[in-house]
Image (cartoon, rainbow, N blue to C red):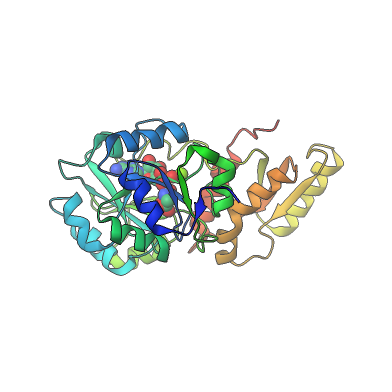
Length: 315
Ligand code: TXA
Ligand code: MG
């Protein structure tokens, strides 16, 4: 076991209070957390991830009643969504209070807030008292980690402590809703389906546009080393994989198919693990059956699309 992997919340608190970095379990993916009020600690997140400094970080808080500490006038849609979805896989973008560090917001006028749903991290946040700035705990542009072992693989000793909360049950990142515009926009589909957001707000949502669209939301992201090819049906996937294998184009270990006949919840929970395992097994190509565009399917499709736009870093 990696020496810094622990379930000890007290040790995690100590590291965070001293300006260190702790990988934290959440219901979506593991985050790389620092005290959101400590500029030097937050800057280290960017250094460790090799992340461009204009990509803002989500601030994780213990409960919705802390929202006014981060925003002087919380928009009503954000209050409604927080009330209905927290703790849970939802991030709201709201106007930031003056004290919120530019290091956290990428010098934007907004801050992203979320109350994650994981017992260890909720205890940590409650005892910490403040906010924890945390992006996903992977190197920039790579697949997010859904187990403590993934974090060790990605970040090794660059993280001071890893709080091990087991595998993440949701498996894809939070849904990001920009509540500073009317109607609100879903900037990133995630663990809470867009249909549910629209129902809760009782209005149709707008397509993402305008200033809140963060840098990095569009380009290739969530990329494994292997190439990801998309298929509309399981039969198509098998044909594509067989053709690649026959042509010797999928590498020595051939192509592997994911998502064939899998429930959406299981697809989301396992997607990143499957992509990592395909890399480890030496597959040069993953053929992914694209799920329907509803519910969790939105988030899975989004991640698959971004993974398929990746360069295929092995070759
Ligand atoms: O489920 C999640 O959201 C995970 C866990 C750890 O909470 N976090 C996560 O963080 O996915 P990250 O940094 O990998 O992705 C957050 C996205 C980035 O694309 C960032 O640009 C965007 O949210 N974002 C954060 N704050 C923003 C802001 N104020 N304005 C626009 N975009 C923002
Ligand atoms: Mg990320």
